[in-house]
Length: 261
Image (spheres, rainbow, N blue to C red):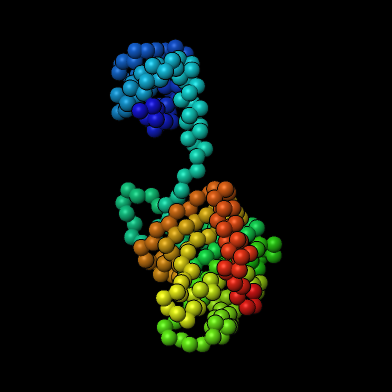
């Protein structure tokens, strides 16, 4: 119930803090006194119950004002994920556009990008923003984790499949001058279909400070047309954790470097 003091509009909350600090508002808290102190509002019953609960804890007057102010600041400092969405717009729902977030994260990176995708389509367009950023910023380090997979009954060797993927990627899919580091999961090339796996993660980590986890692959359909859902979080601790997880997979050779990297 005390949490309801943190959900009222900031202008009314600040008036409430001032009334408590100056002694204008004292227990017992009547609706008339609260309405006068806050300038109206539909949450009077919740506020009265919350203030009464604080009073029972021995917190009132200036102490109550300070408690509300401090708790509100602490709440504001908590990182909240942003909803990232591809698909039809839904009235009353605020969500950032997947294409916009992709381009923003890739196009504004300063030091590093880690990006993983199960699939991509039309690499020249899919990787255009990232390649341009790499060419414009020599210090930017980019690592891509891509799915390299044996298709159906293709019986070629793992080395032949990887070489074919690498030749095609560098020749027709990568549009930039500088090359990123690329890694793949070798289990996707197992001959035995029952033990074969895919690299299915779709995520971007920008500058080890922000993370986007999404259902969207690197494709026009996923970024512009499909129904795709993701969350972007500006959290350096989480970002570093994701990067370190990828790095450990590479260090333990659970992910392998693509030729030409």
